[in-house]
Image (cartoon, rainbow, N blue to C red):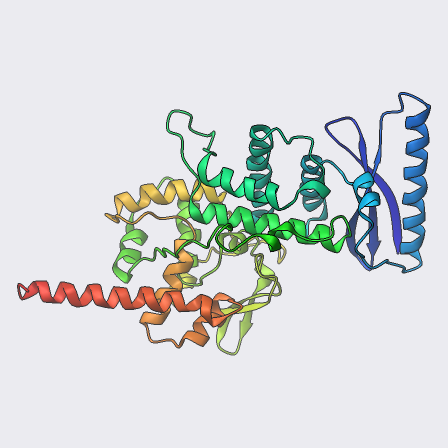
Length: 384
């Protein structure tokens, strides 16, 4: 094992200390929450010397395999060492990028949270608040700010409030971060636990958009200025892969089995669980030719999800589809059509890589709605 003490420059000119640990081909980073300040006087030099001394001691402990359990620390000591909350969030985000162990989707969610939190801190005059002081009242104030005050700065002429699903996502992301702070001994508890259920942001009702068989065929026949988007989207309609998974799909992930070609992913980007997806004829029609590419080459040249969503809206319009399409609707389409085709829900759940069949149940509801719509169309033929 090799461990190095490294620094990360913060916006205020200070430097955050962290450990860069490498063992058995794996690299991990450990934030020490120790800081070096600009050495403008003897006190600053002395403070930096003490911080480095602590960092060296922690490095020695890690080399010896010692990792202290996070305990409920003395509040006075916690307050003294507690970082400024906004700086700590930025430090956390930078650590996610450096570790390369987190999905791009999670990293984007954290950055979105930081942007909204920055506006809240500015609005409530709490920009200098420390992590330890992020209590129940501050948390509740943040949730109320999202509900009642915040508007997206992207379109000043047409200000947009946050959707219920976005607020719930930000609440979930913040809880993940604060729970990690508890495990690291930076705070004694996540203030979210003290919030009444009526004070929390509730989960938005699922509004699944899925294509019918006819709509899939119509979309497959349209011309588009983004053939890469079309190819990726159609492939996902027949495999159920997420954008994050198809973006990272390599030729070595496609294997020959007794039942034919199949995709085997040791770790899905979102769930980190393995998945095996057999490739049917329709999926193979949208699979690119490998040609002379190596096993480690990417299968698809996948555009960024925002570009995909933009192209899909134009494709839907040309195909006469009135539904609002985003890339994730391909996954919803696969799940719904699989249920309509008679696949049992447990099998569909495994194909989609869901942790629970409850998550898959929503597709059964969408499939039932499609059946009901079909019956209504038949009734119209007879004038009823």
